[in-house]
Length: 419
Image (tube, rainbow, N blue to C red; front, top):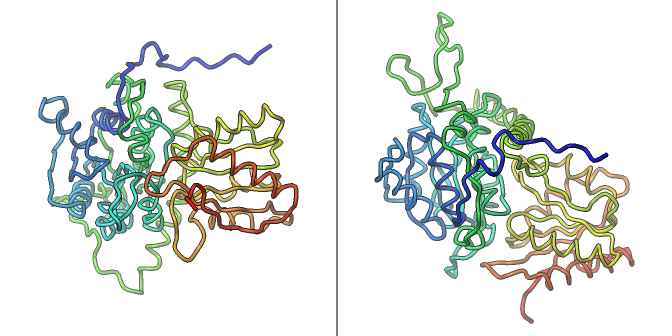
């Protein structure tokens, strides 16, 4: 007898079906998330997010302080001030805008502020390019942010709401970046099922609840926020006598993230009937696979379709979509990949003078295995170049040949470059 499928608390027919692009899906998620402050500066392909949200503000559909600032640096700075005062804060950016936030990204994480940032992934200049790759997201990977990558606009909606709950969990208290591929998702229409406003409010537990701790000499419990009645210092001078210990607090918080992400993923499934693997990784056809490919973002759908096609032709291939990039799921990936003969790692960015960014992480994850899969790194899709099924199949056939010969002649390969 087939196992009975759990019925979500809000079945699909009770959810609102809307045809929106990925940016609009994010804007609707923010609209429903009882956000106190949105700081906004436009940059393609993110602009639609804050434009759409500004309509909600102008129409009186939200009670949000909307701050149009003069730069992305200021946008994140405004979010830092708002979150430090106890607000639920959000902003969005892409590419060079994210690079301009660089200084403040570290400050937001180090102050343990659960800001949510949507990144419509775009190539960095120069030359100027407005289309997708992951160089912007990889550039912030060491800033102390939780980083999630989505495959489609439905997941962009779902994950943006989840991000507030993940970041505000007392075990985490870290900012969260939701990455959606520029133009492939940000500007492409898709049917997205949305929850009623009050259901999202209940899921998030209402407005942000500020964490409490004992801080004064009387042992009085006060909220950790800027409050004239209970003065606290945020980001003071911190020299070598304490700085190291404060960094360790962030290390410990990152250790808690995977458990919280898994928990929120399951809660969302119970509510909506939608889950994304275990919240961290989304494997497909990996159980007996000799060749496994890892990938992030919207290309996952194409890779999955090719895997299905090759399986029908008798090839033992599989794929793993990495949903949570920071903290990186070393142990979880190792368990999935250890039985493969060959692993192909797709990176939609280039690290000049080195291998791809996720390749280095996966190489580390597998290092301690006595019998390791052979690894091949594929850099692809820079500047928005498409990765059609024919190109993905070519990659798989190369990896299948590596599995046969047991030899990797070129470890770093560039997929889809004209010769």
